[in-house]
Image (cartoon, protein in one colour):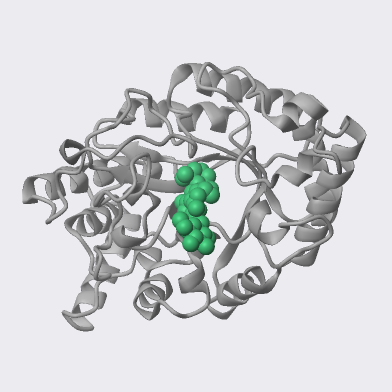
Length: 376
Ligand code: G3I
C-alpha cells in the first residue's frame, strides 16, 4: 500500500518528467523531507571551471562537502599561514545555491603537514605545543565560517579495524583526549555547528564496537558530538544490507544522528582482501584489476543499480536519524576510486557517468523514493 510519502515522491517524479524528457528528476527533491542528498566537490567545481559538474551539483544536491579544499595541508600549509582562497569560494558556492555546507576535516592522521608535529629541529613536539596548535587551527578555521558551515567532520578515522585507537601522532603526542578537546574547541568556535565523528568500515563489527565505545564515552563526558559519519566507501558485495541496518541502529541507540558522508560503490576487482578506505594503500598496476577501461558491461551497471537501491532502502528506513546522504564525488570521472589503491584505473562508483549523464543506478535510487517506504 503506497504511503503519503511515496505518493508525494511519485507526483514529483511525474511533474519532473512532464517538464521535459531531457530533465532528469532531482535527488534533492525526491528525498526532500527524508534527508538531504549531497556530493563532495573538487576545486574545479568550486571555482566554476567544471561547468558540466556544476550543473549536476546545482540541479541534484542540497548539501556539499569539500573533497580536499579544507584539509589541513591545503588550508594551513605552513605555521601561521592560512590559505582561504578556495575555502572561501567553497562556502560562497554553497550559500549562492542555498545548500547545507559541510566542513571536512579538522583532525585527521592523514594530509596533515609534518610541521604540525615537529619543532624547528624536526623533533616531535610535546603535548602542550600540539594542543595549542590544534586549538589555534580549530579556532581559526571554524571561527572564520561560524554560522555558515553547518556541520564539521571534527575527527576523522581515529579507530583501527580491530576497534582499538589508531596510534596516530595525535594519539601518541597528546593521548586519547585529543578527540574530546577537538570537539570542545569546535563547539566553542561555533556553538550552533553539528559536530561529527567520521570513519569508514563501521559496518564491520569489531571496528563498530570500538567507535560505539568511544562515542558512548565522549557523550558520558558531555563532549558535544552530535553525529556519527558512516563514510560508506562500499563495494558490490560489502557491506551486507543487514550490517548497514545494524550499524545505523546501533549509533541511533546512543542518541546521535547518522550521516552517510562519503558514499561510493566500487565495481572493480579488489586489490586487497581488507575492507578499507585507508588512503595510504598503493598497489602496482595490473590489467586484470582494470577490466572495464573501455566501458562498464550492462550486467555490472545493473548490479550497481541494485546495490544502490538496496542501500537507499535502508537509509530511508532510518530517515528519522539519517540526516544526509553525501556521495564522494559528482561523476565517475571525478572519483578518487580511479587512483586508489591502484593508480590509473577506470572506475564507475557514482550515479553520474563521465559525461555527467545519469546512470541506471541513478534511476534505481530515484525509484526507491517513489516506491512504498517502510514505516519508521
Ligand atoms: O593538488 C595536487 C595537485 O597539485 C597535483 O598535481 C596532484 C598530482 O597527483 O595531486 C593533487 O593532490 C591530490 C588531491 O587528492 C587532489 O586531487 C593528492 O595527491 C591526493 O592524495 C588527494 O587524494 C584525496 C585523498 O582523500 C587524500 O586527501 C582524494 O582526492 C580524496 O577523495 C580522499 O578523500 C578521503 C576523505 O578525505 C577521508 N575518507 C577517505 C576518503 C577517500 O580516501
